[in-house]
Length: 232
Image 1 (cartoon, helix red, strand yellow):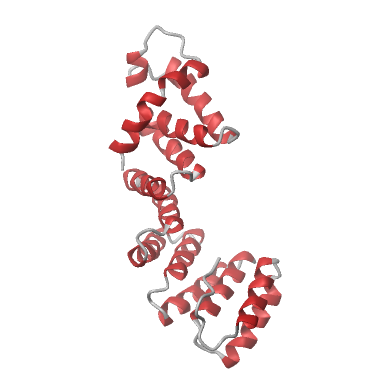
Image 2 (cartoon, helix red, strand yellow):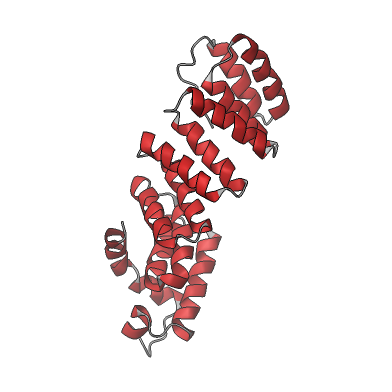
């Protein structure tokens, strides 16, 4: 949600109190308390970031965006506030501006997984699929166990990069077998493999064979390592 370290002027008790309200989803109470704190501490980026998160949780996106903008204007190196601004701008339909804010967060912290992940989502929304794939691969490089990133990558690849899609979804399944979306996607891709995509690598390689889900599992592991290394 927000980094509470080293907030000048604010006591630990004040920080803990307002963060607790936010964590308990008492957003209006948190907003009221933050406004009161702002009277004594008017230029604390943490407070603007937190009140922005409260506004966003209440669905007040324009108000949230203004608060995040204030946070980064006071503290331009505030990566989390740039990321939060980017997500909010995406929700407002301002996709190009969202990409800019998310890239700002990544420029400050190149290993910021959540910023890379939200950048990938936004690039997908812009139909910049190649760039979205690269961003998802960066997420997976930083956090190989990020199940939703594997699944989203597989969804993007399902039309444009059929072979890569199968291996990405296989990665998702092997990391979390109960992930229902991945299982559904794998079943769909398997059906496509047998019916409508026989000119792709796998259908050509294994044409004429009955590729059930069970023997698809036997085929895919050998392809996973080459997929991950060639698409980063």
